[in-house]
Length: 351
Image 1: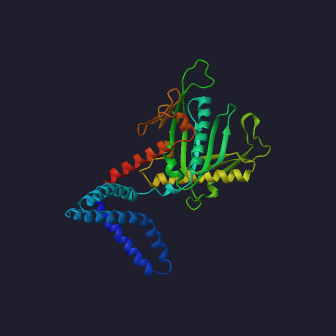
Image 2: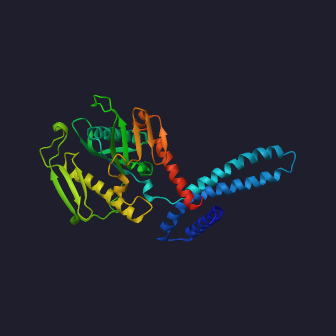
Image 3: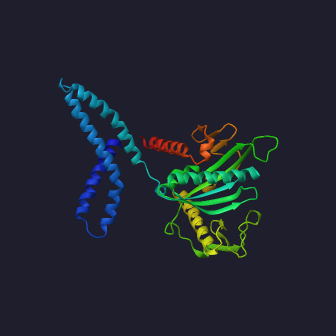
């Protein structure tokens, strides 16, 4: 179906919905209103396209009048330049939506290959995402932060709350490689390490049914780097979801109840992600494929400190501003990845 045929069909549907709402009573109103609110932004773009097309026709008619010709030509140039942009925006608005895009997200970071250096970079990357979240006006809450003796981490988990968090951060899932001279390297040799990042859409209780009988809950004493945050009570919680084998451990809070609540939040997000993968085969087949094994050869992005560059291997984008990226300036990378995905979707839709 051509774009214009789609637009005409949507415009007709909007008029049908408005008429039906004027007549509707009771339970049918909510469903009609929901559909109308989903189509309203597209309907506005259609109206803008049609108004521009009418204005072009009127300006073309004015070309035959010598007194109005110069004015008409100037107006035509502006209108003809505007129309392709309006049509492109409308094509983007018509692309299939991922319903999770509007959600908050759970961020998980783990060091992989590279020992202590991987743990140090994992901590730096975690802070970089925290700065990015703050720049976006999102709320960044640390759920778990397992620090080692050198100031690196064994793993960290955060909840990032705000509208559209998952839409922006979902491209960050995968293996991130760092190349630099570690502070502990006396010979000045460049080391290569990897860190795994997982970004999961946050799930509500209604999204995932978790049966208590499917859970094994273990409690133990929290431990930290050099004795820090060590509790004298069994406040740390480890939840194992028996059907899937997913394990979530939390020890950040001194309260066992709070740690359990946080662990359940992460567990629901992981289970919801599994459901999405099963239902949407177009996405990564499973979370392990998304995050990868942590092997050096399996990567989505490289941070090369000696050369001051960050390269995203999926789209071949290289930025020579590594310090700014590590300060949370991921915008250019995230926008380029989103544009690439949109281009792919447009191509698949024949747009």
